[in-house]
Image (cartoon, rainbow, N blue to C red; front, side):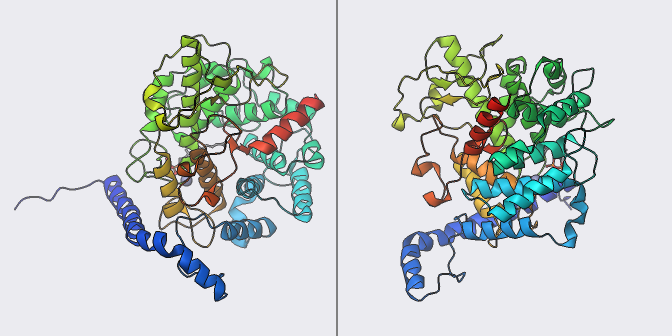
Length: 466
Ligand SMILES: CC(C)=CCC/C(C)=C/CC/C(C)=C/COP(=O)(O)OP(=O)(O)O
Ligand SMILES: [Zn+2]
């Protein structure tokens, strides 16, 4: 008798996920005609019959803002005992929830805002930095989360609550003589620590040569043979660390030291048949990589356009990030142009230095360029497979929702929606957004994952504070 092929555990898990995902897509496609044809009529009928709050014929491709906000606001007010395992991650919970609310274009009321500022103030250590909760050891990850949460809240009270002088000392304390950063006193050194330290220093306007010294060498040593970046030298390339390494290299103006060709090749191939991204080769799709992988793709695409611009002397770029390129990666972007909408006008070459000589704002191309990943496919994965109809997002079907995945699914969805953008002020076209245009989220700053308006407010505030 012929032997049946035996599959590995990884193969079996992959088949199961594909089965779930394609089951959802098939179900949606089968019901799509009805939804498209009768949705308006059904909506009208429900409004007339006062049934608007009932979950009858919910268009599944919609973001369902009310449900999302309900889930997020409840989480910000109170969390059940099942969250006790996240006791050392409380600033993260603040950031994941507040950033998700901001992405939806909403804000919290004064009471919640004051409570969040006071709570984060109690997490700030007497020698700078923020711990995972009041009295806990300051840690770079929770410091990044606290700073991003406070910047997201915005306003004088939140921004001035961050002690910049002590933060500067804390960051210096985390710097290792080899060039990298440690997550906490005597803690592990990795690319996360490098990114969080540089992101914090950059936004607070306290970045200097002492912090950047030797850092590029360390991050460079974490780029693997596959092209992506691992957590530490010798580790496997992973989306989370690739985002951290690339963003840090851009922030310190050393990005062209990386092998950008192999990095881009690695990143785009992490989008699988499910249309979502995986974190590393041969692993399963996961909604959170919508941000960790799509953001590097967009950053790389803009870098290529900048380099192309410098090589060919054309002027398609409205804002630059790096004026000290040592290497140029010439790239013919014609095949990526969105030709039927090519209203390419000549841009000026203003830069976006924010007082410290480091260029913070990611590049914009002064014409529409097709993303290097399947943006609509990615939006489809997030909205159909990661979204929970009751609010919140998850890793993949059969998994429960959580605030981490809600934050990074929404952040990635925003990146995908704005991936065609030619500049900060031009809204995406209807066809860039999967589902109705009301799905459109606020744009984020790709290097910090903070909503642009709040990022701009913080940059101005800390420029004046210097
Ligand atoms: C700003 C900041 C602190 C960023 C952190 C970046 C980040 C998400 C790093 C990923 C960490 C990691 C090793 C995940 C692998 O988990 P896994 O083995 O469960 O998942 P996988 O199978 O998808 O690889
Ligand atoms: Zn995940």
